[in-house]
Length: 276
Image (cartoon, rainbow, N blue to C red):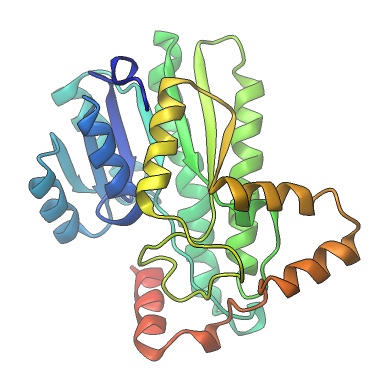
């Protein structure tokens, strides 16, 4: 169980907070006494979710737009006080073979999943460094430690998030700030609805990711993998000879994340989110 005393009263900002992992995390942290602000590009849904959960700040946030991000953080600090934790959670995951991926979608994946994380971290750092305290938590993925056919650009984006977060941890060592990555397996959210789970590995629940984030805030670590089983497998694969690891991955069903497996409505939804 997470120690609520170490979370109670903290001001926490969550991007992509209207649904899925972001909303589950905000709900869990609020229950532990945190003062939660959620932002999302989907203005209607973030307002609906924020009002329903009673979050103190909620509204539209475009993580790829400097002014939008800065304005949102300004509003949070004006209303709630200095930001203690930024959780860069916003992300998209269109699926399909890279040769068929429109350039517009490729750029959108990288804009949200990579640039959005970098931008948010820079803006939070500028506020946290003078205070000598703060915690930036970036939601990466076990895809950042593996390679899954049909998710080439998404995999690349999550490899980038891991490298970026680990570098910040070294770059700002001794400043009083903490930097963490969360690496979920495929999770039962709208984001992952178009991907077939690997054999023998169950998808994670959003609440499991939320619990992992809460524990990171209470006791900062460099990274946490969810689920434990999927995380252990991902780490073991990295120690195996390439041919063996690839063969095992195929046997577990890691080659099933293709756009052909996504029905028409889901594909349209992904493409629409990539355009927005």
